[in-house]
Length: 317
Image 1: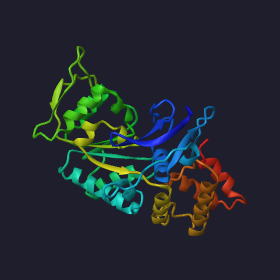
Image 2: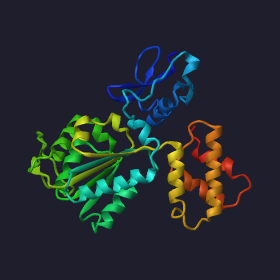
Image 3: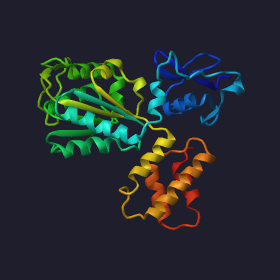
Image 4: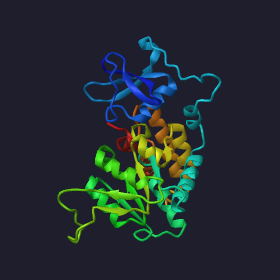
């Protein structure tokens, strides 16, 4: 039973707990969306020791009972968000981004699975307010060290700084402390980075060991908010764009007319039907806007068996 995990709530967080050892599965072993789906459907998660593939099986098979019912007459917010219109989530993301742009809140933390359009919504919202990239806001992707974070914040101390998939900063205690200082609600936010060897910018000029940060920060990450630093979350607006499979298909339907405008509606409908067929056949099928674009492009070519080609692209090995 070492490879059987039960979805449970631990300190308010939904995690996968091994029923034999009691250990908690890491995110690279069982993804958050898999845990949420199993919890919703009262299922256990079984990890294949050879392939690492995760399957969901009814809890009753293992003599377990998963209680995700409403308690004390109160609504379960988890049940609410799994049923709401995805357009509401993205409308809220636009509103939160606007409030950061207006200086009402110093930061926004946007999380959710990849391929949902989180970055597009944030940047498009800023642009719609007349803000220009590289002038009023900057966008960075990829790994960052604590020193790199300090330099970036210094060089853009009066701008909106978007950190996109820079998840390494959340694993570095020094970087997290820098972010805490940058996101505080004090009238004056001073950031310090004291080292024996002064930092230098790209031109070789020394950077001061402390400065005042007047800008704002928007994080965009695929990491679950349950795994985010509590202090960062408490200083930020949070927008968790996590969609169930049904919600994702509804989101695709909402956007299909504007995505890949050169592809006909008929071919897009065939793509969606193929994706739904694959969901019924296989576990771990990637359903998001990116996988829909791949499927639509394949269907637009008019091949005899597009479903098998789509499976090659969106069924995770």
